[in-house]
Amino acid sequence: MDLSQEELAKRSGVSPSSIARLETGKGNISLLNLLSLLKELDLLNELQLTFRDPNLSLALLAKSKTNKIRQRVRKQITLPPNDEKEWTWGHKNG
Image (tube, rainbow, N blue to C red; front, side):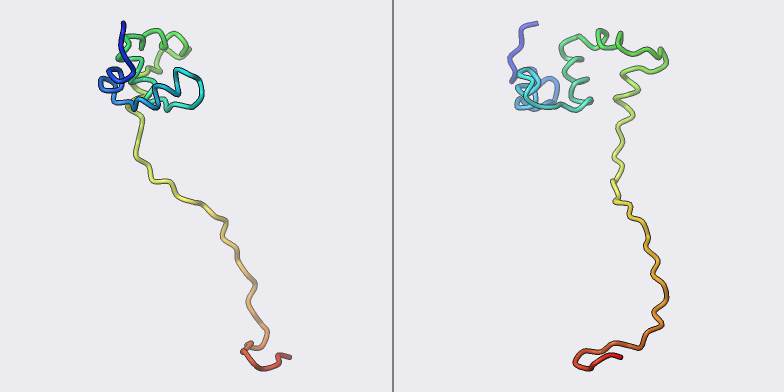
């Protein structure tokens, strides 16, 4: 198949810069973009041979993309109760 980067980008929905980075090996590409490119190049079945689990298909991988909201998880720090006198500005404590 003889396609330009621009035509492949239009057909696959992957940006031309992502395609260029993939071709030159100078960047990373998402799995979803890789699957889109392989589908347009009619090479999706070639990649299927790399999966050992017959129940795991590329179609399932592509569908599993969810829009989960990332949340930062932080340990809750519990402080001991403050038994000291109240501190105020401008006065000596203690």
